[in-house]
Structure formats: structure tokens, C-alpha cells
Image 1 (tube, one colour):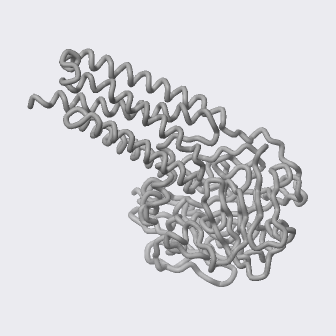
Image 2 (cartoon, helix red, strand yellow):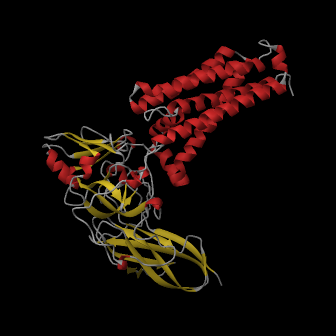
Image 3 (tube, one colour):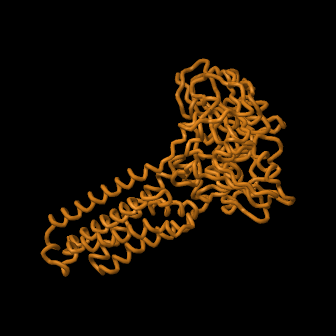
Length: 505
């Protein structure tokens, strides 16, 4: 062990505590206004925007809906390492250089905040937080730099007490900031929904099978998949919310939330599918939506000649885009409710777009702030800029829900069951193959409509051994899903879903 080891260790701890102070104070300052955020979140959003599509796909494949918490943990780990390095530089090389390192943290956070919001006020948490971090670094450096105070530098106990007290204080400030920040949370569950002008009958029982392990026909809100680019859910006050209809329209519109829900509302059962869904994946769900028909809104605004793209813009500046030709009579909606409840915040409250038959990345803008009429020549939306196709009709797909992959089951009669979807076309047939045997027609549940998935099942006399089960669907146009396996990028995964099960002797 060298004589410098204590200085390095103290320097690293000093830097980590200074970083904790910076982040905690930034969180406290961010809690003063709905329009301010912790710089870690702003940096995380810029990381999401900047990484290649392949990295995003890898994160979704590996971590699923936990991709954002994993990103935050990764950013926190990098910040700890960076802060430790800053502290070591301050202790062994130059205290001013260490202070510059902390200031750089503030500059990065401020730049990320402005890039994400476009508001200069958004830099305040980063600037104040980095100032507090520099102050903490200067204070604790008395214990790490012998030339500043030899007596303090020699006292290990005093150093640990000072750094521990500062860390605890920082955590308390950060906790207070988080608690204060919660007052901006939005809970729409208590809002009263107006009665629809076009309501639907209760969903009949014959559209559902009851096999264990089979996903229910209607996906509960709490279980509905969430894939988006928002690191944290936007918190939108319905009292100040507005939806603008702009661009190539004859009569631009601006609607408040109350004006939106006062318009004629319709119910529609629609299955949504994420383009990132791998073959057999769970990034698909079915719900009963309530909203305003998009074609009614755009008829009122008047679509100008030449407009061929509808762009949805989110309050967090995310964009989707889909063809005007999708307004062909299908129930494209500005949705305000989901399964009889106001939209949950994570699913787009107060309003979102729903367009049957198109993958979500081109159509399903959540936290909808603007609908712009434009052309494909003039504008590429978020994912097109990252290599995905501009138009994305949902492919015919099927999935095995039960038995589970690599599951062990008893011999005898067992149910193979799952779901299939081909939104706007409908499912006509599902076939199942056991090992290299012939394709067998599965029993289909009743079809509710051609924009929802359809359940299927097949009774199988399972014999002991290892078996491979595959399924494929055919839609109402006569198209059978292809065996060719492709990745989601650039327009959705394809291939047959196959699983292996073990039938015990």
C-alpha cells in the first residue's frame, strides 16, 4: 500500500459525496416547479434520443419494460464513477480542476434540459446543483489535501464524520425534493367520464377461452404494455391542457381538455401492437377505448390538398407520423379513456392517438399536444430518422401462451392456446404443428371485430418426451404469416412462434 492510497480513497469518497450533494440539491430545486426536472432525467432523455436504434432494440429485448429503470441505474453508476474520478483529481492533482469537473456536470445537465424543453428556466436545477456540489468538494477537500490543513487531513475519523454527515444531509434534501415533487403528480382516476355518443355492448363471453395461462381477451390497464421514449411520465394538468390541430389545414383548431371531452365520443375495441414485439412477445394488448374520431376532427379543420401525412406531437416533443389514407373509415381516435377509466398517465393522459392496423411507433402518440397535417417529403418523424419504415401496417401474427416455453407438463390431454392478430383484416384461421407432424386447425373463439386479436386453442394428447410446438395464422385476405424470421427493425418482426415443452413420463 502506497502513502498516497489514503489520499486516493478520501478523494474518491469526497467526489462521490459532492456528486450526491449536486444531484440532491438539483432534485430539491426541481421540486419548486412542474416545469423543472432533475438533470439525471434530462441526460437520460438525451441518451434515449441519441443512441442507435440497435441499442434501443437490444435494451427492449433484454430488459423489456424495465429498460428505463436499467438506464437510470446505469447513469447513476456512471455518475458515481465520474464523481469519484473528480474527487481523486481534486485530491491528487488540482482542486480547481476538480471543481471544473463538477461544473462540467452542471453544464451537461443544463444543456440536456434546454435541448429537451426549449426553456432557459430548465437549467436552474443543474446550475444550482453543481454549485452546491462544488461547495461540498471544497469543504471536504480540507480533509484530503494535506497542504490545505495538515491536521484535518491526518484525521481519518474527522473526515469520515464530515463526509457522512454531508451525505446524510444530501439524502435528506433529495428525499424532501422527491416528496415535494409528488404534489405535481396527476391522478385522473377520479375524473368523471362523459357518456359516449356511440357505446358498445358488453363484450360477449364467446370471444374468450378459459385455459390457464391464456392472456385475457381484454388486457387490464395495469398489465398493458408500455413502450415509449419518455424516461418519466409527463404530468399534465387537464385544466391547462390544450390540443392544437395545425399544418396543412384550412381552419386550425385549439381544444382544451373540456372541449375535447364535450365532443361526440365513441367506444371502440382495438388491439395495439408495438413494433419492437419479437415473435411470441408480450408487447401487444387489447382494450376498449373511448375517444373522438380523428376523421371528425380533421374534417372540421379541413385537410388541405396535398397533405398526405398526419403527425402526432407529444408534450415531451416525441413525434409519430402516418398516412392520411389511414382515415378510411376505421376507428382512428383521439382517445381519452381506456377500459372504462380515464387514460392512466403512463398510457397517455389526457389524450393519445389510436389508429387500428398500424404499429404504435407511427401512430400511437401519447400525451398528445398537437396534430399536424404535412407531407412525407417535408417531415420524418422520430423513428424514421432512426432507420425505421415510414409506413408500418401490422403484420399477421400468432402467439402460443400456454403451455409455457420449456415448461414441464403431465402426459395426456392438454390445451395449447394463444392469440392471433391482423388488425383491420381479421383472423380467419390458426394452425398448430407438433414436432414435424401435419398442421392442425385450432379452434377459434368468436371474433369481436377485425381490429382485435382472436383467441385460439387446440386439444393435444401429449406423450412423454421433448416436443416442439409451432403456430401460424391466416388473415381474412388469405395471407398466412410467413415462416421467414426477421427482427423488428425496420417494420416489425415476422416468423412462426415455436416453443419447446417437456412432457414428463
